[in-house]
Length: 427
Image (cartoon, rainbow, N blue to C red):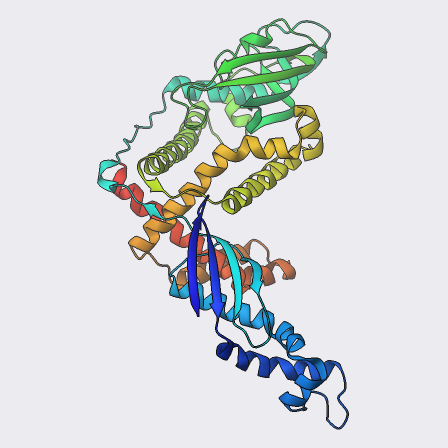
């Protein structure tokens, strides 16, 4: 077998493989009986005629065509192993030369797993931010609890301070809705700080039926680095204005919530809850910053189209699921954006590339550090998942499948890798 490897753009390779005729003969001998099974040869049981008889009946060209897939499959696999290549998709095969009594020549075009030069981990630093919960934040949270217990009355007027606006909204970055940015029937409390500074002020004095489009900027310290300090476009339609009657915040109010003896107990519980939430957000910020810095400082081969397309497909499926939770169809969402699916895929490409590179980086770190998981770890994870579906036999069957076990192994190994990276980088 002779192999010629040619590098192509976007991390593809073209293998030209020549298989000598003497290497083809065993495949012909195995393929011939299959032909005699398909069409009866007088004097012989199906599949039992001698090779020469089958050759005379059908011709060597027919036998060669019957054997072709097996010849290509075997020699393609051998060529990839010999050249030490890592394909990430099925080959596109073109037969260059095929004739009885001659070598077979074919070309296989494949996308290759990009090589990565991992940066010096010691040079990457991410600092922890101390999580503190002040009394003002606790008081604000309790105030929101009281407001949620308040009575609301639909009124026909412009929204005033402390009124509630019910809106349909879409918050977009680079013409794509941010996570949680598309919502119908969303409630906004006027006079209260919004998670995007300036958002609530833009809706001042609006009333039912009003439509507004404006730009605001996320805080620079926002935990999501993709949004921190970045402008977004907000499209808002006011559906209704509500006045509120809010209960007084005191011991009696705390008792009315069912499990608190007084206001102090309520405050302590709320403070503990906020602290836990803020710690999770801070850990998410640290992890995101760490991975972004690692990707930025590492070197990657050109990313193949097949990986970008698959990651973009996953992102659209995730968007579709998120929209479904909000009662919105992807088709309606695209109409709202005035975009086609192809345009949405194009918008997703930059983030898709980041996600692919992050996955490749973690894989490289796992391989370099020989990080593994145990069967016991996988079984424990499966048991946890099965507990959530005690009566759903089909779901349990899927969870126990080998395919799902292999998927879990990858997840658990990646978790270990990220945990080790955080230990090395986050100080």
